[in-house]
Image 1 (cartoon, rainbow, N blue to C red):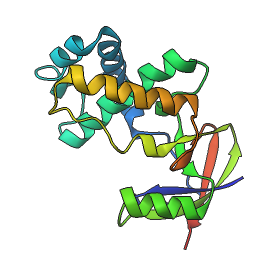
Image 2: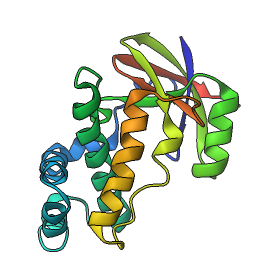
Image 3: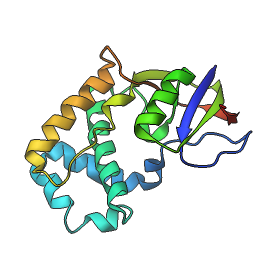
Image 4: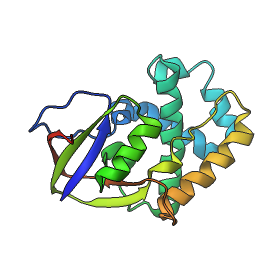
Length: 178
């Protein structure tokens, strides 16, 4: 199957597409998922002092890790059999959708044509993640809003704004999509 991956990284033809970068912070993700499961008060206590020890120092990376933790918590609640985003690479079924996503969320990024060699592809709405999570808002207000979006994501609710593929297995980069 041919798919299209959007990234700001430089990928070489023949390179294997790697899973989500949050995978590199699996322990931090696990602790953040536990905090989400325990509720807003637990997540608030995790964020201020302990966070720098758990995640990269950049605010964007910490925010992304919390967002992925909320989505991981929702995955387990909705359907634990679905693969974790931490174990998946992401792509788009068509060049048109990849271009629309890149234009809106990854300006200046490159679209690569890739080939799925083996594994599974699950289509979910990648448009439900970019609204992110606003950690400057009270967590007890923000968390329910993001959990609701994450539940819709894992249930595969239609219509999908940006139907992305969660890919497990081997995905090889063919080259820039041109």
